[in-house]
Image 1 (cartoon, one colour):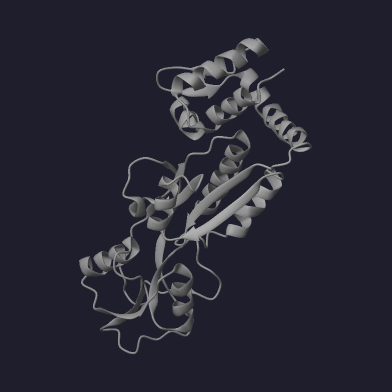
Image 2 (tube, rainbow, N blue to C red; image 1 turned 180 degrees about the vertical axis):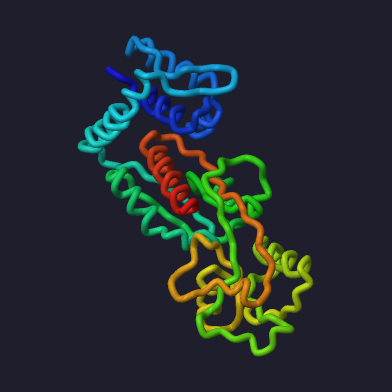
Amino acid sequence: MLDPEAVLTFILVSEHKSFTKAAHALNTTQSAVSMRLRRLEEQLGVLLVERSTRSLKLSSPGQAFIQPARDFLSAHDRAMGVFETHRPQLSIGISHHLVGLDVSQVLASIARENPGLIVNLTVDGSQALLARYEQGEMDAIILMKHASGRRHGEKIGVARFGWFGAPDFESGTREEIPIVIYPEGCSMRNMVINSLGDANVQWREAFIATSATNLRAAILAGFGVGALSINVTENGLLDLGDTFGLPRLPSRDIMLLSQVRSHQAQRGIETIKMAISDLSNS
């Protein structure tokens, strides 16, 4: 009988095209990943992955096996779930700066691909999420790279920003642009202030928002122009950067930090990663 953990390892190696990244996703070592894959290949009697010093790709048997491998894991999870009194859970946090990435679409992907998984979703500021993650209260968190200030984690997308305002917004005088902005201590605030300063734009604080929801509401209400991710903008807001001569804003990597251990929860993480990657690249 095939080992579900080994099959999951093969799937992650094929998706990441890296033993190191697959090991990180599984919270294990590169040698453990290599050993699991080698045992699976021995059991099947074929070489699934072609390895070289510069690249890693699926062999012809590996390409033929990848979809049956996914089907096998899905069937295994359904079978195991029949008698489980405690369904698998995934506790995940998403930075409120990213929550507009059509979370409903991300959640729909999880429900479709992982029907037995209970998802506990928290939307909060990046520092609060990091603190809870480090205390072991969350399985995974998704942040923008400048918010974590860390080098570890896995890049799963890119957040691009623009200056947005209400359709009927008028600044009154273009000598001093009213800006809707986050409070002191927020990395997004620093990004906005630095960009405006570097471009010598005259501006004033028009509204200080403590959350992304409040920021979008204030922009929509006409308080001023604000920086939002292009990926998360909602209907009713217009890109007014060129209209008011505002500077181009830097992009930020979307990072995943994960300490998921069960393969059911890991499959949920993989679904989230693919959904966010698709949304951030759309």
